[in-house]
Amino acid sequence: MATLVFELNVSLDGYIDHQRMGPPDPLLFRHFTERVRDLAGMVYGRGMYEVMRYWDEDTHEWDADEREYAAAWRDKPKWVVSRSLKSVGPNATLVADDIEAAMRALKAEHAGEIEVAGPELAQSLTDLGLIDEYRLYLHPVVLGYGKPFFAGARPPLRLTASDVIVANVIRLTYVPA
Image (cartoon, rainbow, N blue to C red; front, side, top):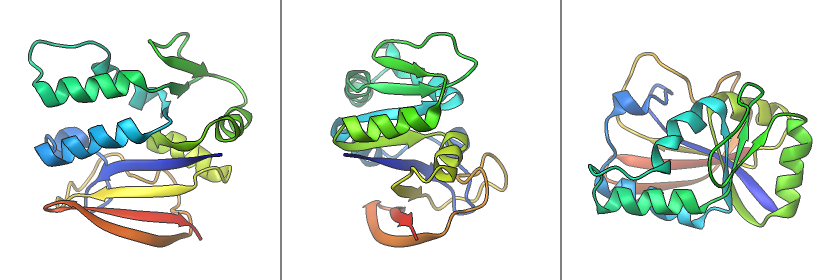
């Protein structure tokens, strides 16, 4: 049975604006490449999927690390939860109806970790009791505004691990309490 893991980079004040946090440290970027390789797949909301589609096609500006990440990302199955999209790209499946049943089926049919990305989607799955772990990659920046990691009330959580991933970035792992 798969576990659904909601994980994103987050500022000290709880926001997930990757643009304003700046590009990741090269070691952190390599960490995320390895994370993607280890995943059984990814579940995206429409907005996050549209951001991640950046990795669908190589560009000449990319370095070797970016090409490596893109290859790992493309290789993984993706499920995109959206009622507004009519189609999705390669290696992706559109989930438009009965999200709860679809996510329960994913958990039952797959082994390993399936990443959930997108705070609104994660909130919906949290409300359904489907998120198994929350991983916050905490960066030492204060953004002051933006999109919060938790789109609604923070669920009751219990800290299970804290890991220094690279200098200045700590991963906090929580499970529902």
